[in-house]
Image (cartoon, rainbow, N blue to C red):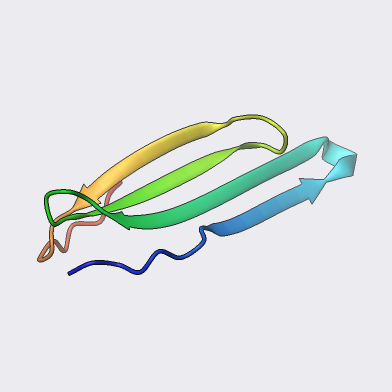
Length: 65
């Protein structure tokens, strides 16, 4: 099963009084091995940020911690 290519979910949290300028992105992509990859990206707006990739098999019910 493949996922349609959709734009990532993009969220921002801005609080100028606390100098907080954050962004968060979630994407789901199929892998070459029939699994799905959840790609989470976060960081300061304007910076490259950090990225974490977690893969799930078709019947996986595990929730990453």
